[in-house]
Length: 452
Ligand code: HEM
Image 1 (cartoon, protein in one colour):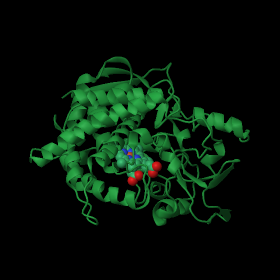
Image 2 (cartoon, protein in one colour; image 1 turned 30 degrees about the vertical axis):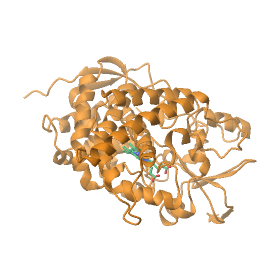
Image 3 (cartoon, protein in one colour; image 1 turned 60 degrees about the vertical axis):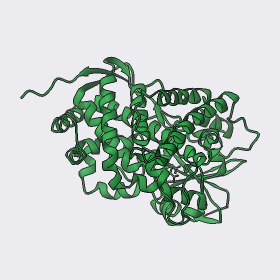
Image 4 (spheres, protein in one colour; image 1 turned 180 degrees about the vertical axis):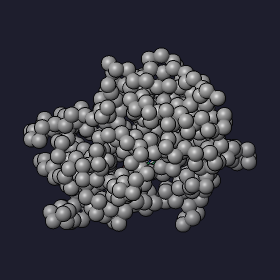
């Protein structure tokens, strides 16, 4: 079965219709030709926008001259009450300094230290998992939030503050029904936008809770009692260039983005992965076979046993990249495939289209985890695969997310059998991440242990 893909809009629509479609769902607002084109230009009275699928252009924007293509100030607008000046929204020197402090906490070697907390969250998710016909995004959101709290602050989601942040965050999203990628449109300031009173109040509550956690941690660090987790690592790392550490306010900004970027994305990817496995039972069986070779309490070194599971997770990120599009801005005159582009134009990088582009991927809409072991896939993986973006602004949590996704998938499939509910085919829509319009529903039963 071909995994669900949103219907494309007709090639030509009026600007107002486009904007309306865009605000409902950015994926179905696009024409089908974007799965084939190297580039597309959108002209509106307010701005010019270029969606680029050409690997040379993408490399220019993300890798070769990223300083010339910053994030627009408007991007952060919808999220600023919650995220302040976090690394996700800053540019230039501020952003560089923040990355110098944050990156060491996520280095490859640190993943071994972070692993037990991820595994404990997986075990708790299994213990909590409801059986029967279940909407799976909800328990997986819970699991991914648990991963973040355990790895960042060494507390499980059952901790009173963690639970409050998680619930308040849901409220925050509810107060922003259009908290989707329309936030990235450089529309004029009179255009109805965000920051309702309820949204601001909710953001304030979340930040107060995170501030309490951060201050408590600062006190533990001061007395030498702090656990060796991501928060301690980040709060004790001095920028090698300036010698400065984060103050409380800056750390709260970063915690807010770790929570948001780290749990929404992973929950989206894991939900789609389980749906794909439910609709491809032979792939699910292969994961179950791999997972059966793990210790009851898996160790970091055993991740190397999960080759197929990792490929299935990679393939999920190809078909349903949790961050479907990213936006940058030109700051000088550019030449895009022979077309002159003025400063202030919007540049859209679209993992969603690139990952299903018919010039790069044979059978682009099919779920084929085995493609990751073929030689022919190498060029596409290099040129047309960027679920975590690329270049210096690449996702800080990319390595972390690959460990989390692979391990949770293996442990969940070892514990349960996931079966699709025929009457409920999920339709992908882009909110902050790629979610299903009416949730993802699966039948969950306990997996019978393999016969000896
Ligand atoms: C499957 C899971 C994940 C996916 C697909 C993902 C994807 C991305 C993408 C595409 C970006 C770039 C956005 C842009 O440039 O506009 C990004 C940035 C970021 N991600 Fe992730 N992410 C995931 C998990 C995580 C986790 C677990 C963390 C932290 C614990 C994290 C932290 C961040 C941060 C801090 C940034 C901002 C980096 C910067 O702008 O310098 N992400 N992520």
